[in-house]
Amino acid sequence: MPATVFAPWADPNQKPLIRFQNVTKKFGDFVAIDDLTLDIFEREFFALLGPSGCGKTTMMRMLAGFENPTSGRIELAGKDIVPVPPNKRAVNMMFQSYALFPHLSVWENIAFGLRRDKMPKLDLAARVEEMLKLTRLEKFAQRKPHQISGGQRQRVALARSLAKAPKLLLLDEPLGALDKKLRQATQFELMDIQEKTGTTFVIVTHDQEEAMTVASRVAVMDEGRLIQVSTPAEIYEAPNSVYVADFIGDVNIIEGSVRSVGPDRYRFSWTDNGGAVTATSERPFSDGQKAFLAIRPEKVQIAT
Image (tube, rainbow, N blue to C red; front, side, top):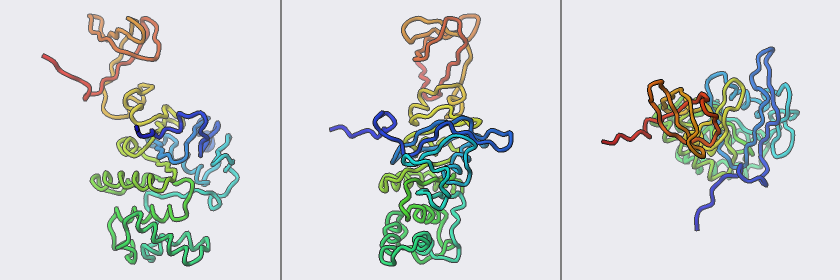
């Protein structure tokens, strides 16, 4: 029996966990988020990807409650959360700096939020032990943050964020402080933990490799707008614009003009002296229209 593909965004009967409806955020005259509409579903690992200043962190801060939209509506599980203060939202946030308490042990760091909520001691201890096991930190429970590695500190911050069982976990470039090898290993740990807990993760990153590795869907942003929202494979193989094609992966982009030669098939010409190839496109073009051909280096085959 084939495995069920996780794709709630393709099911019109599925209701989103998070909904941005015509959200605009201005700082004075500067428009950080421009009339943005987006649905994120339960159990998704969703990535906000884009260059610095594109608005991805502003979106995360609005979800956390640190910023309010200038206009529009943000829903969590069908309820408008704009009036809800940050400490009353079923949302936790994990910062790039981790923000661990240096004077507390790993165990006490994970327990901190539960103690603030006055969870009964036996339940608290059981929940902390569960988080230690989930993040493979049992042997380090009594160590201070300075006594463990960067990757272990990252897992402590993740365990603390998940301890209160939030509906939504926001990750603000959580792997940025790690070296490349550790960052790659931790990406798969994040995916494993997200799958085990079933928590909806939203990660903000400018690292395209990170976004394409961990996410079920990626939103590519620029200047406060969503340029494309789709699966990593769809964004890589079928970008909807020159911007997305150029932003994701290595690519050669050639400008030319097209002429139809059949259903969804076009003759693409890039020089006046006959240089041309035949390509397919689901997007319709008129004869003579300017177009761009994107070529991924790994797709090129040389035959003799």
